[in-house]
Structure formats: C-alpha cells, structure tokens
Image (tube, rainbow, N blue to C red; front, side, top):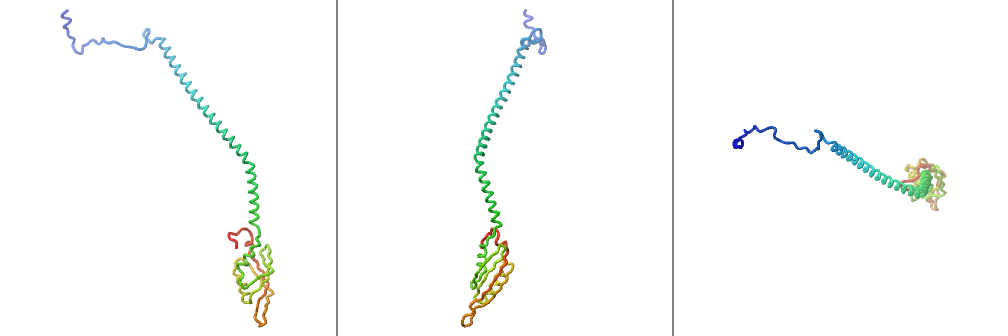
Length: 209
C-alpha cells in the first residue's frame, strides 16, 4: 500500500483517456431525441408564423394609412370642386367683362379723335393769328379760314405749319387785306387747307397735346 501511494507519474505521461463530455441536447441511441427535434421544428414554425403575422400587420397598417390619405385627398378635392362651382358664375361674369374691355380697347385703338385738331392748332398757331370756320375729315384734312395781323405774320404762320412733321401738305387761297383810314394794314385774311398725318388722330397717345 505504501509503495502505490508514493509512486510518481512523470510529467507529460498522464493518461490521455482521462476526461468527460457534457451535452445539452438529449440523445437517444447515439443521436438527438425525436422529441427534441419536434420542439425545434415547432419553434421554427412558430417564429415563421410570427414573422408572417408581423409583416401582414405592417402591410395592413400601411394600407389603413394610405386609405386615410386618399380619404383626406378626396375631401380636399371635393372642397376645391365646390369652391370652383361657387366661383363659376363670377368667373363667367369676369370673362364677359374682359371681352367688353377688349372690344372697347380695339375700338379705342382705331378711334379717330377729332378733338386733337384743337391741340394741334393751339400748339402751332401764332398769337397774331386767329381762326374761324373750322372743318375736319377723318382722313386728317383740316379746312379753315384765318386772320393774321398782317402779311408778315401770315407768312410766319405758314412757315410754322410747314415745320411741323404732322403736316403732310398745305394750301392757301383767298388772300386779302384790310386797311384802316390811314392806309395801314389792319389784317390779312386767307383760307387754308392742311393735310395732316391720319395716325395723329387715331388711337391712344402717350401724351396728349
């Protein structure tokens, strides 16, 4: 007994068969237990079904949100359509009013403003000249009789008209004079016809004379 107790085992010579194995998987006849396999299969099926249910629930919630968005959009569209229907009479009235404005604008663009004759004469008439018997045609022709202080102012008046680019041509006739008792010329009488540019009398002007 003493000899066995004191017997030494060399380092590195320990019995290689010494040891044990631990397995958490139930075994039967050297392989996994059928019951354990069924549990694993049941777990996999359960997890799969749970995943499918989660995905389905997510899709269902998404569909609900989309339906809610569509409902809101349809409500807003109905509101816009209702407002459009309410505004339709006002829009139609505005359209007709615009048509009238366009028509009047067209008439205004081509309307002959005979009153511009007075602005023209006011601009070009000398202080020593006066007019009478004025007549005007839509073609821009003016006929009138005039009285100047003397022949000198008559000539100056004719030159003033010739210098105006609005005047295309002019002609005078019936030139005569009146004298006082001392033989001094009191006036020069004449008839005058002016042909003006017709565009001067047609349509709007940026600045009326």
